[in-house]
Image (cartoon, rainbow, N blue to C red; front, side, top):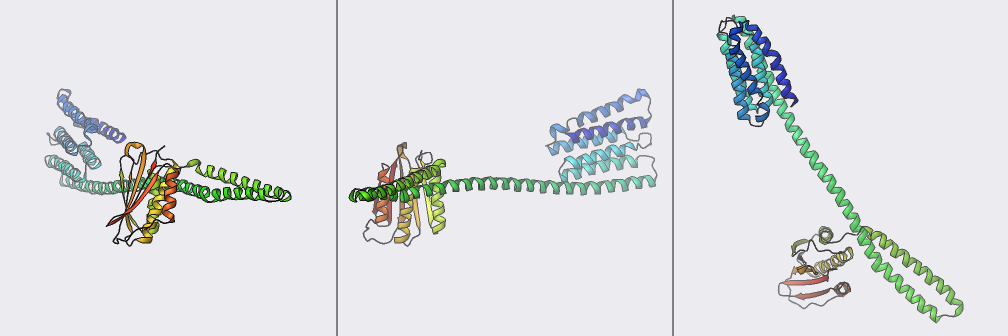
Length: 373
């Protein structure tokens, strides 16, 4: 908008001198004043149609004709301020219009200036001077236009790259935070399942040993038991702290499985149905489902030549969360459930769930479910 008022100011400064240079009697001025008024009326429309290049070209072209007609040398006396007015119109065209439209507007301004010059009493020297001036003006404006378009293109590219950089940075920070949370969940569950259970078993064995020992040894066994209890409480506090920012739900499960897919060079096809994304799983439930899927994929890598699997998640009715891992097989020999799958079944049953494993002619299928709290 500031540039628009600048163009207005330049025209307002030049036109009074152009009218005064005519040195006409007052009774002839209304016709010229009308031409100037119509010129500025069209000029005030420029901000409204700035984004419509064809209409803007029409307005600038009309103003060029109005200026040439108003200051035409009817008495053979050329008005030098016409050069400045037409130069402003040509320059504004290069400033506001696309390149091809600005060339058309510049050609119209050159034609109007040449026509008025040829119908004036100017000598060949001044006509040559005007020709050289307008030629240099066009060269300068064309160079300006190309430079401006190039800078605008560079600015747009810079803005696009910078915007993409900001998005990548935000995404990296988010992914990093999610990775930290996932690692905390994994560590917490590993501590709970391994260290916590072993400490509990140790305390029970110490208690049994205390009952079988003499009174002199019971105090030492009691102190060992208290130490084990303190260690168990510390472990529980550590697990609670690690799970403070526990994240659950299907998105967390998918991120863990995607990482497992990359680490083991597998091809996994996901299918999400029936509100699985919005299922309100806790972090512990998400971990159990992830471990179950991980065990099924591990079983696939051990016993199948095809390193691919289809995983389906669904939450029918919103009361249970169900998953299915389907792997193509070529053999038809019977299947015997091992330690890993039996542990997986126990984990699911502990959370009011269940598991089923079966084999068809072309697929090995593991299905499981867990009740949503």
